[in-house]
Length: 183
Length: 183
Image 1 (cartoon, each protein chain N blue to C red):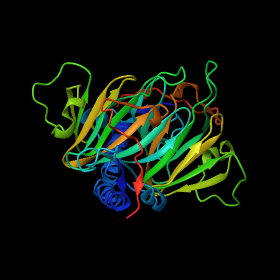
Image 2 (spheres, helix red, strand yellow):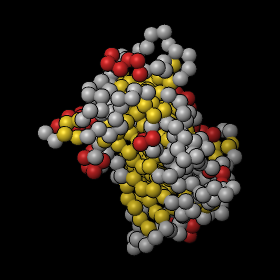
Image 3 (cartoon, rainbow over the protein chains, first blue to last red):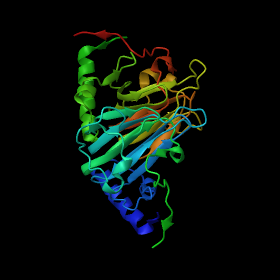
Image 4 (cartoon, rainbow over the protein chains, first blue to last red):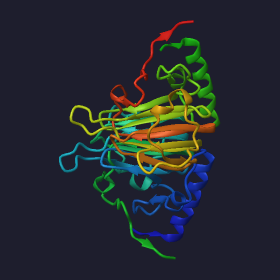
């Protein structure tokens, strides 16, 4: 499924607003290049993620992630790539609230609003709630998904090298970089 | 040279204040554990650095650094350790102003105030000025030093694994972890 150019622009504008609220300063170039990941699932509001990659070398990576209210990054894992252990990442909540789910003892009732359309593809339910200043490290090869709270969230991601193109999503409908339709 | 417990406490209090000004949220535990690096040079105000290590795994590291006005982190480099290439690090200015000096074409007149007592140990003078949102990546095995601007600075450091105990300082008087005198 594709994403419209106007939708990307509007998401960039709202992300910029969230970063400002959170006191995160970006350069003009970074603001213009905010990445909007729609995952090709049709509803960016429901399933999507906005981000800026500060640095991604062959040794480490740092990104700033933004989630709109109740926006969800779909379940996925980072597999080993070319003999190197999969990506390990630390999520540090800077602003707002994050509901994070990983493999492990499932919670009886999740605080997050599980996207109806693709509920079957959210299989891990071990719940971690992050408020500003709190962080959690996700081991390689571990399924996880996360959602912004009622006001959304800003999350600093510190990690080993990022190779997003190898991420394995539970939902086979996910397209990491869907085609853009000019409108 | 030693550092007094009261000096550490006062530096922690001021660092906490700087982090608040910059909108950086820390947990209570992180606030209580703010690291004060005096480098054993006698004048923490002049040569020193305050920091919180968020995460340091065998793959990556992330820290938040604080510099008081004109406070300087002395010149050093990160050597190869046990066959592994030296630490590579990205400094991202979040608040304030940073004067960063690395190997390369020297500037005629540095914007930083070079610490008088140990001026001879500040040998690299290629100047980079970072304002909020700007960043610079320092390659392994490269001499560098940096100073906070007129109001100080908050810097996010993203890097490969941190092994501070192997850092090589130009000034032989530097003691990475000076003894603490209770007072």
